[in-house]
Picture 1 (cartoon, helix red, strand yellow):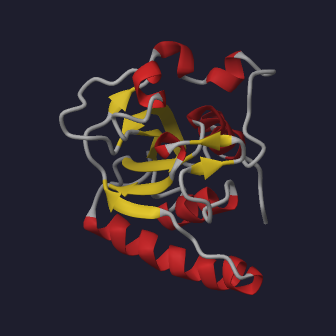
Picture 2 (picture 1 turned 45 degrees about the vertical axis):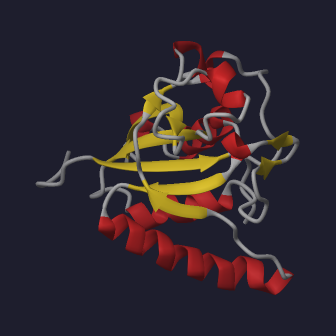
Length: 178
């Protein structure tokens, strides 16, 4: 850690959490000191009474949780707005509850902000990305920008899944779009 900055947390949902975690770590590898310190995949944004959800239950859609990635990052190396823009580059934020062939509320596009400053940045970056990348093609970003709520870590076998299983399923939308 440099200076007096302490780690911050960014929370994003943009489809199957395996691919979301994988693309962030491929482009911001912790060992290369690019700002991301640690990632965890899990569930957030669900019904308040749906506590301690598991993968099978989340996939039914009854809990309303999103598959998400929680990113601990060093803001002196990578800024929150850079992570938000990268989030938009790596999926299709114009589809409701869908990424590629994956459909359901658990695959929605959402930014779960952890501070009022993150909310402000997320809204500003969303407007910029909309104007630059989606207005020209006549599409509208449908990403939810909502407060981060209760977080539940996914089961151990989901953590770093595509690093442990390089030939595992990956949504075709998890790539750089620009």
